[in-house]
Each structure stands twice: as C-alpha cells, then as structure tokens.
Image (cartoon, rainbow, N blue to C red; front, top):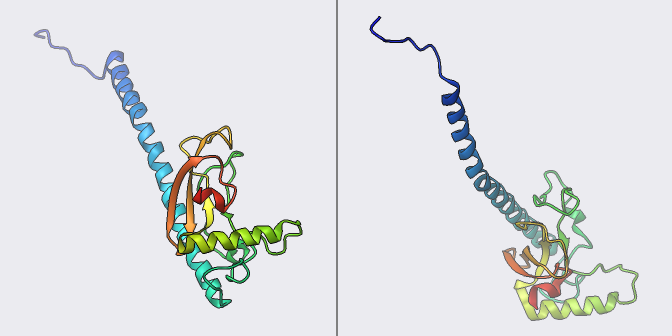
Length: 184
C-alpha cells in the first residue's frame, strides 16, 4: 500500500456542491421558462382570435352582412354562442379568479332591453364607419405580465380581433370596456 486509497463514493461536500449548482441553474432558468409559457399562451390566443375572425366572416357572409352599419345589418351574431363547437377556440390567459377566461365582444346586443341600446347601436355604427375594417370586434384582455390590481389606473395589454380578421395588440391605461377603448 503506497499511500493509495480506494474511494468507493463521493464525499458529502462534493454532493452538496453539485446539488447547489443544480439549484442555482434551475433558479436562473425558471423566469425564462415562465416567460416562454406566457408567450405560448399569447400565441395560442392570437391563433384562436384569428379562427374566430374567420368564423365571423363566414357567418356574416352567410347572413349577407354589410361592411358597416348597426350589428344586425352587418350580420353580426348576438354573441359568440354560434362558435360553440368542438374544439372551441379557447382563451389561454389568466383572469382574476384564476379561471379560464373568455373572449369579449365589442358590438352591442340588439335585443338589449336597456333604453340606451339604440344609442349604443348608433355609436357602434359611427365607430365602424370611421374605423372600417380595422374595427375591433372581439378582444382578450388576459395576457398581462402581472394582473393589474386596479382596472382603471393601470395599463392593460390586450389582444384585439379586427373586422378584417387580423389581430392587433394594444397597451393603454384602463380595462377595455368596449370598442371606444381601441380608438381613443
């Protein structure tokens, strides 16, 4: 025995160093994976909005919808219920209750019993006449880096489906509460 020792395993210090290095690498890479997951969900919603746009275009063509006017004259459905097929284009964002959120429409409901429904339809007609094919008809506000605590005084990043089936992204102050948010 010339002073050589046979080592059968690793020392505790060596194991702790390896575990510590793995922990540091995992801690540094987690934010990248989280951002990648958010971007993936956003991409899925852009694709879903585009599919909804194609479905709306086909629906409007079927009911001889015009390019402007009140929603019923444009051939717009009362809600997105006509899309209730499988697989339904789903929103992949996060809402305040951590439930699966849904998309919002911007046109007024034609059978709304409220006294201001005719005013809302007239405002919609003016909006579509001014904005044309860039009018936002469906939007998805659930792709924030962090969910704002205040719907009025914080910025929102929102995906919007235009009448020409393209998808736009806007960031501005306040929660989107209708078509006016897009063209302020």
